[in-house]
Image (tube, rainbow, N blue to C red; front, side, top):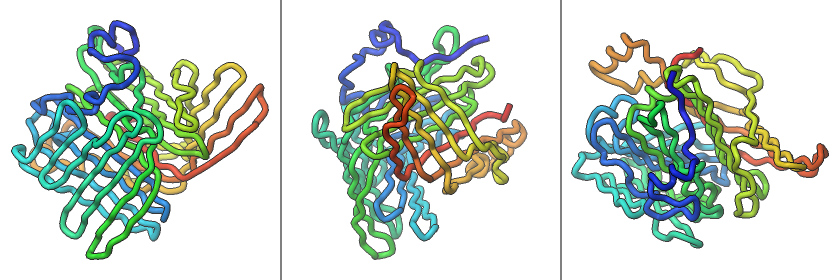
Amino acid sequence: MSSARSARRPQDYTALGIEPQPIARHEDGMRTTGEKDTYEWWYFDTHLDDGSSLVVAFYTKPFIEGVGKGLAPYVSVELDRPDGSHHQWEPKADADAFHAATDRCDVTIGPNTFRNVEWGEHLKYRIHVEEGPLRLDIDLVGQVPPWRPGTGYMYFGEQDEHFFAWLPSVPQGSVVVDLVLDGVQETLKGVGYHDHNWGDVAMTKLINHWYWGRAQAGEYSIVSSYITAEANYGSTEIPIFMLAKDGAVIADDPARMRFCLEGEQVDEHSGKPFAQVVTYEYEDGADRYVIRYQRQSTIVDQRMIERITGAKHLLAKVARFDGAYLRFTGQVELEHFVDGQSVEKVADPGIWELMWFGHVR
C-alpha cells in the first residue's frame, strides 16, 4: 500500500530548489501552470475587534469539480458579523482577466487583487475586492515571519507521484479593513493570517479529512493542522504545528506534538463527525504547551455537492461523493506547563475548520 509523507529531507529541499530558511519571496508567487489537474489558491482570514470574521480567497479554479479543467478564476468572500448575519460573494472572471506573478504574490482576478507589497522585515500585503454592494481594501502587516512545515510539500505515493503544498506566508499579522457595504463605510482592525496552497491532482484523491486552525492567544501565535490521507495512501496521519511567541517561532517539530478530539458528535447537515474541543499538545523537555480550540459556533456548514451543478452533480451523486466543509469560531486557549506545573494560561477568539473530502471510516 502506498503512503504519504511530509517532505523534510535535505534532498527534498535540493530537488525543489529552496532553502530551509529564509523563505524566498517567489515561494508565494504562482507555483502551478493553471492547466488541467492543477489547482492553487491564496487565502486570508481575520478576526476583527468588533467581533466580525472575514475570509477572502483567490482561486485559479474550483478545487473540487474544476481541477480537471483549465483556468476558471474566482474570488470567495465570507463576512460574518457580530449580530449573527452571514454575507457571501463569489466574483468570477474569464481566464484572460487572470494574472499571477511567479516572483511574488501578485494575483489579479478581474478588478480584484491580492498583492505582496513588501517582503522581509516589513512584510505587507494589500487585498482589494469589489463585487456588487461590497468594496474591501485590506492591509495585512506580518508580525510573525513566513513559515512552512519542512519544504511545505506533502508527497503521496511510493514514488512521490503527487503532492499538496502549503505555505503560511503570514502566520499572524495586524489587519486594517476598509469595508463598504450597501453604501455604509467602516474601518475595522484585527488579527489576520495568509497562506498559499497548490497541488497537482484533486485533493479528493489524496486526503480523507483535515483539521486546520490558526489563532492568537495572548503573546502566542498558533498554526496547527492534522491531515489524514485517503485509504489508498495508508490513511497516513500528517501532523503540522507551529507556535511563536513575540514574533519568533519557538516550537515546530511535529514529532513532539500529540493531537486529540473531545466531545465528538455528528453534524446533522453534512453527516460528518466533529469535535467540540480540538487539542494539540507539544512537549519539549521541561516545557509542555496545551492548545485547545473550544467551539462556540459553526459559521459555515457546507456539503460540497451543493456547489456542483449540471451533469457533474449527477456524477458526484452516483460516485457517492459526500465531501463537507465546516468552519468554527470560539475560544483558543493556550496553557504552558514547566516541569508539570502550570505557569501561564491565555485565551483569545479564533477560527478553525474541518474539511472532509472522503467518506467517514
